[in-house]
Length: 433
Image (cartoon, rainbow, N blue to C red; front, top):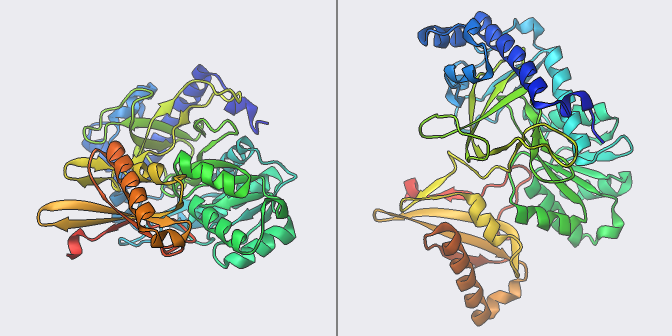
């Protein structure tokens, strides 16, 4: 099923013509209503009317996260506050939060974008969706909520936490879709196992996951534990929240809502635009956002784009799973290391559970990593020979993937802290030693 066939199956020439028209309007709105963008364009000798083809977007300077913090809270807004009917914000753990505002039309477009990815993932109006994202200033809960309702799905706004109650609601309400972070879905599967809630004692059939990336190995683990189809979606508060892109049931890349967001891939070091299929940093431009337009926003997420039509029938460009981030990338002895690489080794290995942490330390002038992997069966800790063999096997596989040696520590089941939101995978102790 396709939610909006006219848009999602539009041919390439049509979608690019629509994007160009919208880009001109978005750039014009930003120039005339946001002093920050007017100054940047004036300094570059650029005016909105200079954008005559999509390639001209490369004439615009990039927008970065610090720009939002420097203009906190409302200086990037393009409309008067009386037209802003919703505010969302990041957690602000590294300073002032990122604040974004939505007009009535923005919220309608947001719901439309989410509705498309919900239907692409296999949701329909006979489903009951349990949302285990946190509600509040975080965009995840409300963003998915209104898209689910637009499709006609019954929504259980359970929010995050109180995991035993989550399982009670899941059983009693007959939830068929779970919406949240993949790491929390894994944690809930452990709670379900403890409570004796097996696959035959719940009605879940579909998982719609976002808020953090997950490897193919983790996806398989989630699908095995719950007996569901696990799909991934992508978004970020600076652009809209969830709804930028999402997987269809083919699970071969996330379809981008191209009539609302224009994607580019750049070399993160040079800023040069890369071709389809080349890995680099994702840059997004909002095409219809009224409240806070974003021009060439650097997401720091590493991926690549695939323009080929999908076998599901949609023609929209797909982005690959996020391969890592330019800012969570670890440089260990000159080698670039992404947590997702380590996850791909660990998840699905015999005796190893899906929870892990990466501890980064510095010995003298050398950086080192130690991977803490959680055992499924704690009794293995007493079988020294098997334990050492498993550690050796993991170290060998990690070295093959990372091209550097790393320490491995196998720990007791449930000893790694669980998270109801984004999992904390990296503990960087280099500045504390």
